[in-house]
Image (tube, rainbow, N blue to C red; front, side):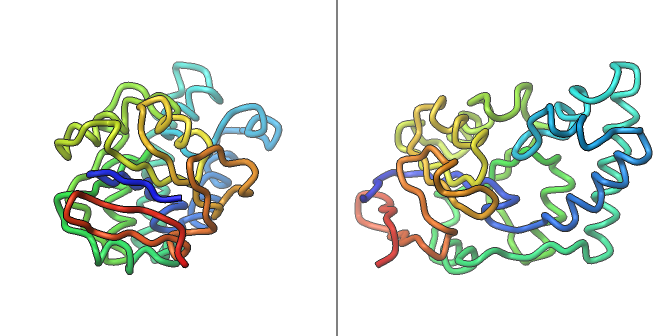
Length: 217
């Protein structure tokens, strides 16, 4: 299958970079501090959602502001210490071949945290949509619609790259093409126009009329 578009919108964690070790380490410590159990985590959606929404699902309203600040501080501190953040297979090759005016990063992390993680692996996003920029996080389409707007592209001409079901749902709701990356979920858990193991499994070509995305030969 070949997907044609004019704008590419990449999720960050689990798509461009892996920060799973850092996330587990920080959220485990946070949970211990706030008395959150594994059972509590099991009842809420975690991956691909803004931290503020996750915290709001887990704690009483009066604790949320302070708890959100605490997890943000823990994650930033972890990245500054090395934090186990690494580029995922195919990321450097795909981004290196793209003009800077055709792609953006759309993440559920805060701008400060997302920028720190990207910087750790040497990625400078030309456009970054973060949790600070939106009212409703994934699976709401708002983040990806804002990404398309900032690229100056029609939503129907954008391709979303995501590892999380919530992110793919957001892309579909925005009326965009979707590519699922089986880096954090099984391929059969990802509903997308195209599903590959990671970005190394993709071919992204710049053509006279835009961009062409397909599974690598």
